[in-house]
Image (cartoon, rainbow, N blue to C red; front, side):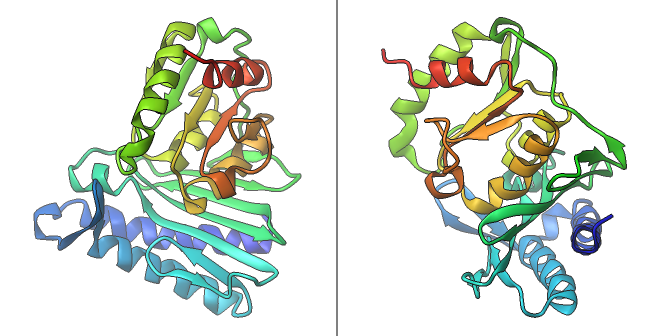
Length: 260
């Protein structure tokens, strides 16, 4: 395992253990609303602090972009992109679909990825050029070759309500064009599931870099394709992402961009 990936795994497991312990005492947590349908708990902050402590001890010169504490040396050559608890709303309701997500960018290009699901003890990892793994077992995207047969993941625009009409158009088109749609509620984990072949594709809008950085690398290293809704490599900037195996990627783009 690459030394930087090993550090990220150590950080993710430390945060995951903290999150898992807290899941047994949800009624004792302090929760704050950041904006509409966007919550943060003391667990988010504690998990992020645990992650950053590990990363900074190993790589004090690296920059960090983290959901709760923001950007620190964001222009650094190496930038860790951290979501300490993706799926906070799920977590706060005892809905067991959430994860820790840690990605490492070098000059803006993803190099390392960790997505850790503490409820299932599933560790998804990837190093650029070295493949994607689930608990040390190589994973690949699905072989589904027709969108009609595909199971698609998505995320509803529950925070930025201005996207609702646009999203509903896409939802309608994809619903008519695939075998089924699922909305589990944690984008980083959804992307990891595309990498593992559990979902054939995923799309969402209104995301932040920490929602996508690690999961996108997992998909690519598992043999899949990732892009924005134009099929270009600008999803970290636009917050719009579609990921799938290579056989249904073009069909997904066509549906997402269909008019009417």
